[in-house]
Image (cartoon, rainbow, N blue to C red; front, side, top):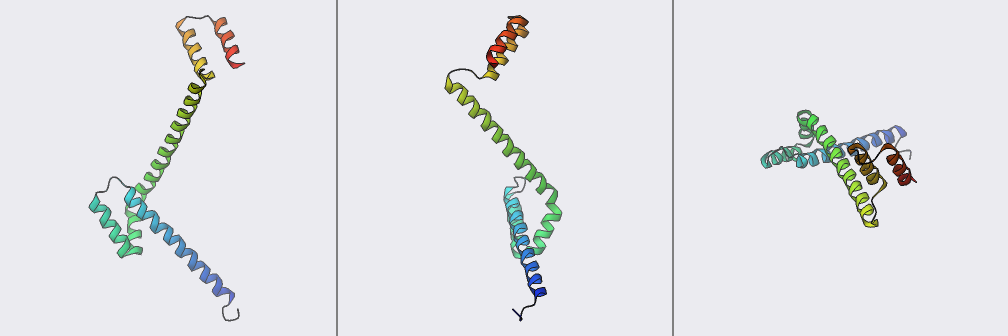
Length: 135
């Protein structure tokens, strides 16, 4: 341990973590190249070759040139994933309500509100039916 002073250990750790961060950035740029539907095949190939042959310069130029759209694609992907998840929840909840044979409380309240708006039932009837559904 005397051969390798503590300051050198910290210096080595710093360079190691910087290298790991660099790898994460490189992989992020490469996945963004393939995820971008606006680039043609030749454009993707060109950026990929540039990032592989001259990795530091290629990634730096890519982030400068396309960093904003890279962030927009990330935000769009997160928004689309959230929308798919919400749709899955709606479908699953609807499937379970349909499988049980009876409409859900929300569906029943919506139907009652529509009947009240059309004048088919009075306010008192609506309140009684609503209390029955919510009970």
